[in-house]
Length: 81
Length: 345
Image (tube, rainbow over all chains, first blue to last red; front, side, top):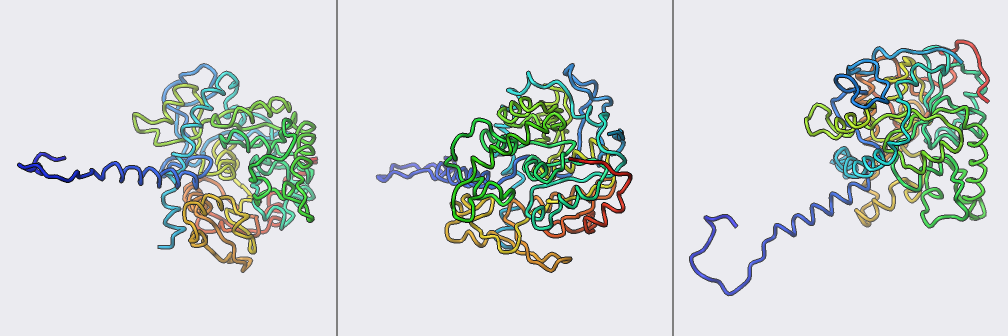
């Protein structure tokens, strides 16, 4: 409880802090909504692909360049089949 | 604001809540199996030319016989399918070059590849209820045919698996990964973009630092992720969409929609208010969406607006129309995209 709301006398009733109840309602809503979500995230205002910065830190990745490709520009097409 | 639209606005954050934890856990578990980046797929021979067809698992696929028409056209371009559409593709004689899988669900998604361990119907009624592949529904007499449909799919995937490449998100369930490997499919990996990679505490950035794989902005669902992959990784610039409806066909009972149990639980008797009805300007049909599909549609339109190349909605139905999307019949798209013929069977 904030310092300035403290009284200078004792009361007989116990006053419950509602903060916990509010938190649990929010938590319920969050959990309920999460069940309506998709199977993969969407990050608004970001590019379709992000290939990191600098050389790939793990040895296995085949990232040829360190760049962000807005809208997928510049990926090579390999005709075949 | 309508209740459905109001809920839809909360789904970007809600999806993160739903998939981030399990997706990251799966990324850790899948780590020893990761041998190839999806970027290597761009250097692999697939279909010819810059045209591609992305196959979603929406109801128009069956209503419009899109796959049968695709096969009949001899389309020579690249075919990329969402995992939920794989069974329909193979049954129609279309072997996709690439199948995309993202969903971390530990039991459901493996069924799109045929689950060799399924011996009796599970309590989960998802496959009996979903609108994506009617083969898993009860038959006309109400008899459960899940096991029979699954067995047929196991055989088909085992037969054609070695011809199919899987673009697997690191979030994919390990059961799916194991099944794909068992069926002889080659896996190419990528990370789902979970959050803003420019933020220093970003999960996307941490994942990239862990495995070096590119992060794709998934758009909420596997069909949209398949389009992102086709555009941003494979570099195809004329992309036709089939089965990417992002909505439910007219007459679909609410009980047969993807999120019905969740909406019922969340909203009680008001669940019907969450559905949004919209007329398709081309067919004049009224399709409808739940909050999730409505969000998927908004997201797709946002991404398509800024993307290079042309995206052509050939579903002949559904709810995906707006700026950034061209609409044409499948036959028109295939005629324009024709660049030789090839047998996809």
